[in-house]
Length: 402
Image 1 (cartoon, helix red, strand yellow):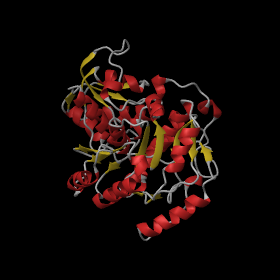
Image 2: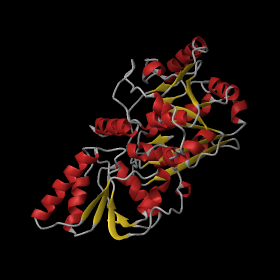
Image 3: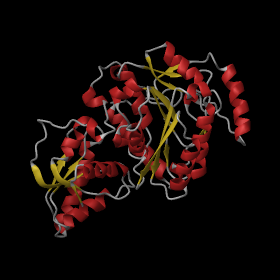
């Protein structure tokens, strides 16, 4: 569970999650990993207090405190790096869990080994997963949930996507696909991408009848005005380009995924995104230490809130040699080359020019650490969650940060 501020909401989510499980199930062991994504409210005090209240020999709660908000996609990955169970759930902190919601999902996993990802019906979602209800209090929600779960117990649906608010995976699926694609930064389309890689890895996705969870929705995103829309439009373009989509949408407004994508062979090189430093490949014949004097600039290039242009000009002012990495499987190569050439031209005209090279190569996710280690260091960019992850990795291997 990832949280950013909203302390009371996070505590309610954790408490109702624990209370939703029957004793017989808890006796088999329940592990909850709470990642605090740099909260500035009471979260650093309230979660440890709740941990001491709820933990016992069968309930283990890990509290992972991050110094800054590193974004949803990577924040979830940090949580996944601590998970050890045979079933792993990615759950938001804006959820309330009714009693018994998990039982039909466990039955599905027990009876069909081809299903790798299950999700409940949600009060606030998209497509057929959306129930479209709201509640004044937990008691009303729980009453509705029990009635809805009874009526819907046979309404199972195989789908190509579910939203990321509440996803339950087989651990073996995550062993194949890893975590979220870091290029989605703060979030949006990270869940679509995760679902596609689940299917490519050979597993089915099901919305499970007889389940229901209350989802409030977007409260963390909404703490910064304009943030969710900037991420949405930036990540829409990345998602379409990465998966080579035409832009056609289905009845529910989701992009139509061609059979050429759904049926292509699984490749660890392209489909696995590491969640731990040790998951990256440690040696590569492709990347050698050739750029000892260059700094690497990686950013969420299409997100208009990113300050990557200011970072590039600052590097020019300091006469730093740098290389910008704009992988063409996520970004429009020719559009960004034109932008970059224009900025370098301006820098040269005002006398702060520097040597800037452009790299449009596609680097396999498992090779990312080797690729970064090919440089003297990385350039920090303000208001950029993709760059924050790169800085996080660079610090982990003791590279310079400027």
